[in-house]
Length: 311
Image 1 (cartoon, rainbow, N blue to C red):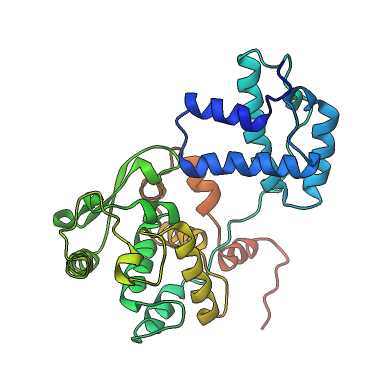
Image 2 (cartoon, helix red, strand yellow):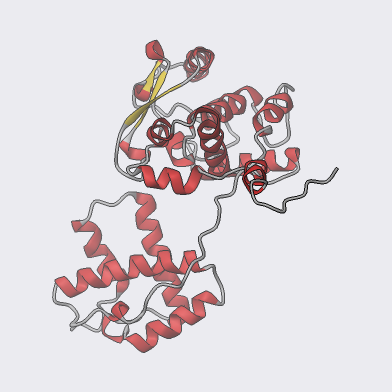
């Protein structure tokens, strides 16, 4: 065993065999950096024994949530499994170093009035942290009506916009499950997407290409953003600004769960909502979106003998 063969060396080899997304590679790198902070230096693979990894788990859980540690552990375990298969090590230490227990919490949502209030706020020509307002009004509307993930918004290209059908193609590029599916949008959103495409073409002086990003903030705010494309972090910062205006925390993930929950409550069609979300298993939709309202539970409770409503 070469003493210089550490996790970074292993990741370089692993990514040659596995076609990983850049964001996934960054997650692997984060897991390695976390382990290196614990060991103070890059540790040879042969030094990553059960005792070291047990101590690393304790160290991590003092500094991060259990879900974050478990994500790091999954990546490290995958790398070590690869090393084991390639004959670089003799055993898998994570067999004896299990994940941290995680309580199942109800997914966080936002008040269902968030969208109406947001549209009212963005009626102004200029809103701190949310300019141009027309751009963010359209982006938030698309997220509200489609339950798209932040990554899907970033990966949305003009070739995915089916204006004649008032639909969007959720491509495998932004999908967790590597699947593609269609979602409808209101006709007025299709019209505003047409207007956005025309505005982008006018400002850039170039024809809009099919593989161009739909929500490309840098093109509409020249000189203000260094990146040539809109990134996940730009959407996150916009939601932070929106949270300040609304007075409560709103995020892409919370909007997704809120829209899905409301659609399910009002339609009762769990299969359609599951298809809208792109879930591979309808059980996932049931576990994340079915949340009985307190009033509904109270009415069920009233069926018990001895229940005395307040006069």
